[in-house]
Length: 114
Length: 114
Image (cartoon, rainbow over all chains, first blue to last red; front, side):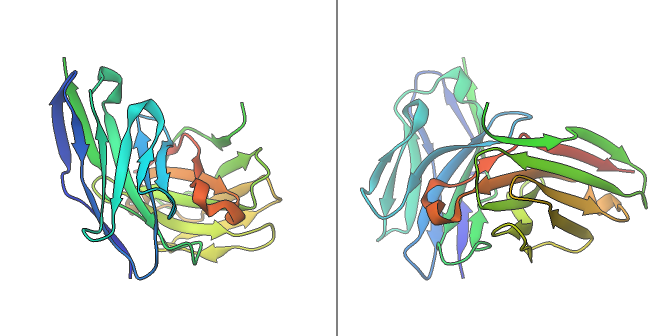
């Protein structure tokens, strides 16, 4: 069975400082992993994805994530937070074998302090 | 703009009333999905349609029905609304042959059942 754990329900950073949002997963298969962002009252937007190619994945808006199989982690980082990064972030795992085997984490709310 | 369109954006229902949430995509995607989002629980799959003419239950299908009207449209029906169905509903689509690319989401329907 698959599962996703987002280790922090809320993260607060100052503008211009690094962002780290943590995600751990479990999967019986070689998973695909995704990060989505949701701004207030909006739908979810794909930030980046890992699909068994390069373990360091670069996404939109300066975000990147590193797949670490030994640690079963896929943490999201950004070197310098911007006010517009304040949003909810979801880590997602898919084993690619079935349409309904896509598991969303509970989300991490990111606040950026001016 | 290409994407997923959901209607309505907001709805208030009384317990026992029925309604249909509409979803249409113009990306020629094969697969479409309905999710509900509740605080602290991420997104949970209600129903999905792998291709035109097929539908299947997801994690939380009770109290809902769906129709894949054609390749573009996938509707979600609440036959007798209950307060437990108060949630934000998202429609999503993707090309199943390209699961690597994740989902494209609509902007959501905020439903309150009183």
